[in-house]
Length: 426
Image 1 (tube, rainbow, N blue to C red):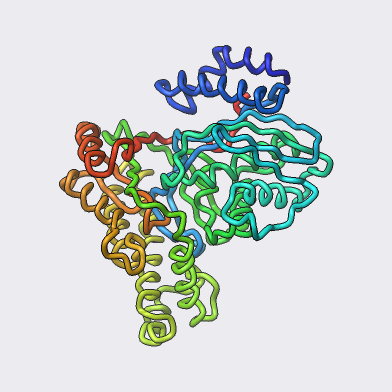
Image 2 (cartoon, rainbow, N blue to C red):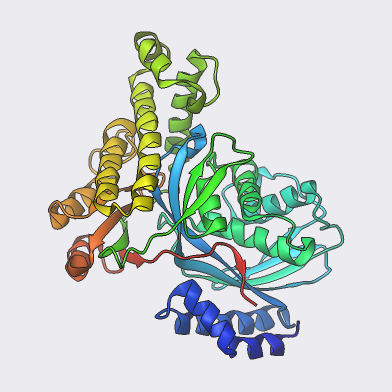
């Protein structure tokens, strides 16, 4: 498809309607402008016309804090912030990615091995996604790809820009080189592989699944090769609430050891029972052996296991509450989840920190402003990063003003739930 065809398509009513469906009526105009920007950016960067437009969203974790890597239950949602890209095959044997405002990244498709020097870099994610897809049979030999992208998913926002990037790359390669063979869950698994093996982060599968599938999704990871994924309808505005993600001001770039500490301590609990993940250890057996497990794994590991058992139940109950339209019950469960994460999972304050406790201050501030209404909890991995709040619409502007007065301008992101995951727009 020539660029002129894409430009023409962007002006057609059906395309505008698609943007309104994806970004909401109020976001369609801005999205259309971004489409023009990436098409122009592609030509400027690569000297040729793009052939397609793609988008992959950020995600918010609604329930199931740190349960996915234990093959547990989660509730998550795609949001209206996304990575938007123009792309075209180039037959160069290289993947070239130009992200607006950043240096060009080039990955050689002839060398798809993990590279230590690339760990924790975007290049590792590109190489990892391509490597996994090639191993599964995607015909990338003698291929090549040019991509120009722009993102509204803030880095460090807790909305998982890395998962959005992995899903975007997987969606593009799947569409342009494999005829759409992979379904959204398979694309999510490819992204997780890239992050685990090439990027070097021991993440679960929730982030990628929420970004790839879209909407609100209840996910059961009992069988990670075939997770059970169910979309659930939710209109926050009709329930009288807005969803806010709050940047606490603490980064999470150096917290890999904290995240790994959670999985390692839970592994120590599981090892007592000869199992790999907590999903395979019945809670009754855990409770019966508690004195011995404390000696074998330590008390923090035991408390973290208590959290996972309870959080799995809460994630299921949250999904049930949303299906039943019991939004007040849902909010009560969110509040319980936040307390459990802070008390038992202990992923709000980095180990040993006393002076810098930005995330806990953020939670305390939000609870004070909400004054018993709505709900607030740690969001995502924790330790730094973000909090999530469900805020009554009539309180939203006051909530934003008061939180940003403490946390800084732009720290309160009001997001909406997006109905689709990784997608080709045109």
